[in-house]
Image 1 (cartoon, rainbow, N blue to C red):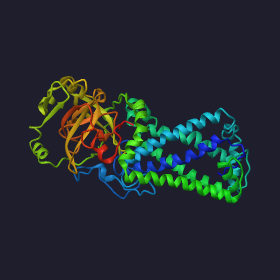
Image 2: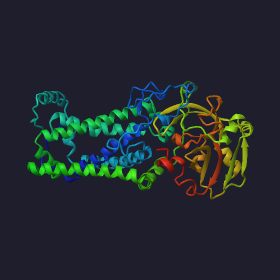
Image 3: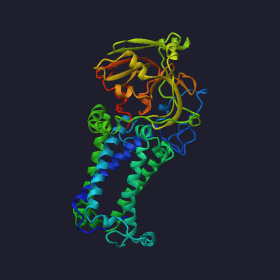
Image 4: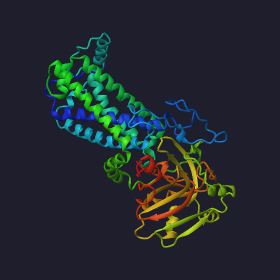
Length: 491
């Protein structure tokens, strides 16, 4: 797939080519980091352990909590930093770099498309005759005989088909499959993930697309070096052919720049993750708010869709307070509602059962990548809001858990508008049965446009606040505080 170009390639095309490679490498590496959180791929949304079609781990887990209760965090692998960005079980940073890179990769691609079709450059890439396929086969035979001096106008048939496929098929395919994994998009448009037969199939297809990009890059660079290297390198960066020495210098400089950017991004993410969390968040968060802030869940599955196995995440509380409540089957449990409200109050399990029960069958999307469908029964957060009457300055709702991790109480904050959504409920039943301990007994939060880490389990109390900056480490949740996740989990 060597580049046999004329010296009239415009500057914008050469610049877009350079920017594209920088961000596609970041996307691949950060994508591998995201994959490390669940290094298994499935062809069904049940994502049952042992049913994956490929896995990148030696760990094995049985889908049976009766033999051993395990959590999905145990499935994670620690990929090295030379491979993933930033590596070493840093999913939060991986997601930040992935979403940051995709913004600029799509922007670069959109500008490229516009300039391509407002000029004559599209004629280099778009085949205009079916004869290109037999010509490509003939060219392939020449390549097989190590004859790389195949001429084209300006590309040979295989080059033209390869570039066309990557630019107009593989690129949009990656965007489409990536969007199908978004819980906000899936909840708002339940039909969309079904195009790909569910999120897990979209995840598998997205991975295969990434493999396609990696193979293309390897072959592309190899063919650039094998087919008139000085002319190719000169045309790629200078717009005209150059000498072998200058071509080698350009290639070395290009490689060093790409490597330097990757080394810098990895190093700063591992040394100062809070800095990266905030700086990349300044770019990601405004766009997320525009696209997903008002996403409304419309998903509702059938009982026949309920997953036979539903992973648990987070180790159950070990405090004496929780163990005493569990021993007495939560008879003495009371959930406190307080903060910036007119009417603070407490609710027991008996009180909850006296309130109108909301039932919904929805798909759970974990930030690690697995999915499962369950039926949830409980009370609407709208009931809590209507009864406590939040004050005008109450902007966020904070859910506190009985769970403590390394001495810190688990909590998550959500915007009060998200709490008002009709599918935001406090669930005390799962699949028609009282909630069990691994899944959050006696009560857990369900927010169907968000990722699972926002759905606090083992709820102890609810507080209405004007700001979350003085709670925990001030990032909006325990995972945001300690694992550098983004608070906007809906993306």
